[in-house]
Length: 321
Ligand code: SF4
Image 1 (cartoon, rainbow, N blue to C red):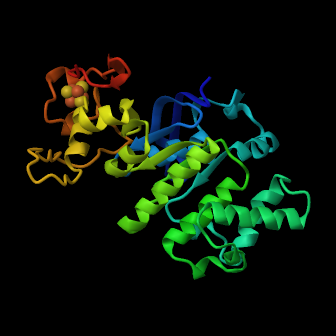
Image 2: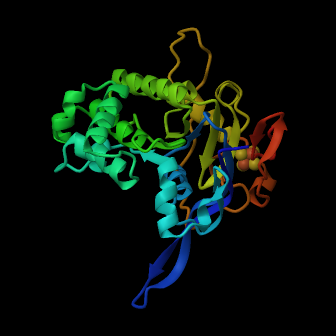
Image 3: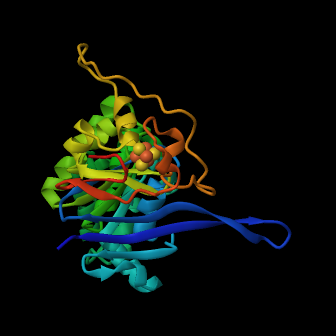
């Protein structure tokens, strides 16, 4: 049974206008996304900024309320839970953020930050047990337990991300939504954090929804990769298939932008014309058609369905084969 099942999720934000704040239009940030994640699996989610990937991650764990659709997690309908039920279920799914500093209370010590999560869910019998657990978590993320007494500003970006991971782990989650967790870090530190996440996944059987704009990073950590454009899924398959044999013209352009180490590589960079269109007024037909290098007349009027092109490899393009 899948750990997470998302069905036709939509997140539309109203755009208000005028004296009476009438709703003029909607931003379709997430427009009918379905996905599943198995226990212990990493699903990578990629796309340019503004494609809806962060909104999707947040709406799955209801940090943003979805407009419609369902989210089933560990056999429970997350979209139907009330406030108290949702708070207690949140223990099973956590989030780590791109900028860990802004998510760590600067007035609390690291021990208090991690201990707070343990307190909320009553996971330690007393203060001695809580302290021991905090120390164990700091060790698990590669930090000296003595750091429990220090404040977030005393740490580097990579160390702060480790603290964010320790806080997420404190409640023994089954899934962590990782929202661009290494984008703000130096490349050498990125690799350390990715390796830490991979080690923790093996040790604890964690599943990740790993959101990033960098396909090279996503390929390294994910078993499957999903590509989003303008609120919709345009491709989904095993990570190697998406990164080596992309079917959708948008994925092909994203992959062509990944630097290649091999000097003999013949890969040509595909430059897409224009910018991502506004999600308030998306293009008709295939939403990618104004930028697509191989668009045909029907692409302007017919929206392509996400279909299985080869076993396990899905793409939303009329021409994909
Ligand atoms: Fe390009 Fe048409 Fe395929 Fe859309 S459906 S990606 S416009 S070829």
